[in-house]
Length: 190
Image 1 (cartoon, rainbow, N blue to C red):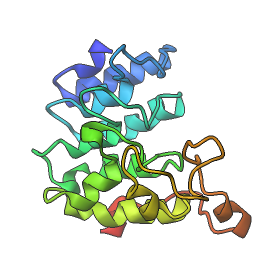
Image 2 (cartoon, one colour):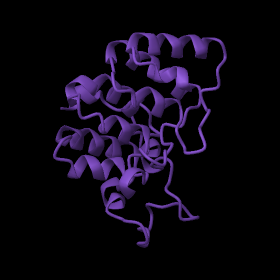
Image 3 (cartoon, rainbow, N blue to C red):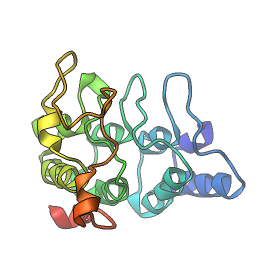
């Protein structure tokens, strides 16, 4: 994974593409939970034009879009912490991440918060609130209500699965024919 931390974004994107072309396992995760996506999105210098198209490849190859790294949380939370960039600059990365129905915006990650809770309460990323709420409405049943549940509180009936874990995807949307093939583009939602 060290190759994915190259300081030159175009080189990093090229290295990632070559590694994946050569059969590298995109599912690799370090002992502290860092995976391919954390490494790519956590770099000090980002260039969405080069890297956003490549970001889809590790996810399609099995990299956990909801993986939680001990220090930085989920890949989306890593991206949200890139305060040197505006949301408009990061929009191509958001578009890629939000295009996956299994992106769990309510997964507890950094600071014992979910990406949704961070987006709603963030003074630095207020533009993320609408896209996160849209993603929850499209792919999850009662997402905002579930997001209000903190650690140690009882889950809401119908939102959590039979074993207490979150449902992976809203069961009512496909049955009702409401789930689109992709979540609307983040940049168009702002």
